[in-house]
Image 1 (tube, rainbow, N blue to C red):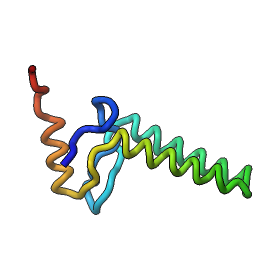
Image 2: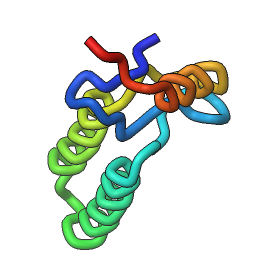
Image 3: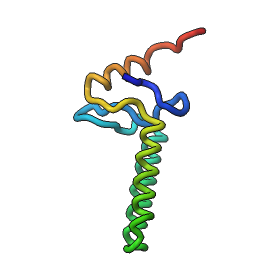
Length: 92
């Protein structure tokens, strides 16, 4: 299981505590989620017929979650992720 993001050192999204998938595990992840929600609401309110823009917004969010997240998973994957996060960094 991948416990680090594809891009960068800090994971913004990690395995869920309940169910299967990803959830925000850092402040940056929560900012992305709230920004996506705000942009979705604004897009719905002000541009009703802009389907390509909606798909672009959703695609961007999913790509960002995939690049800045770990492998998706449930409670077992979450405990592995938390153990790795709490471990001291390896010295080369």
